[in-house]
Length: 74
Image (cartoon, rainbow, N blue to C red; front, side, top):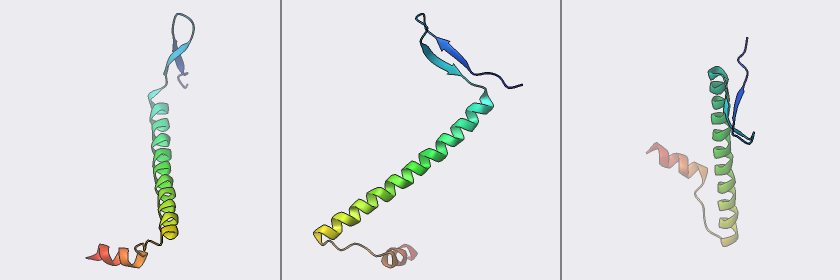
């Protein structure tokens, strides 16, 4: 039988903390880590697209993917 989620409340009846079973906490934490990584990747892509747009507007030359890959092989 699953342990129910428990709440700690203050004197006014406001929820201040929550107690969850450890297995459920681990599952929630794994999901949080995956979502956090996804947000980080998507934010990086968004920043890169902004950089490309700004470079195109200013006429700045950017490194090509081929040049980048060749550089990383050295």
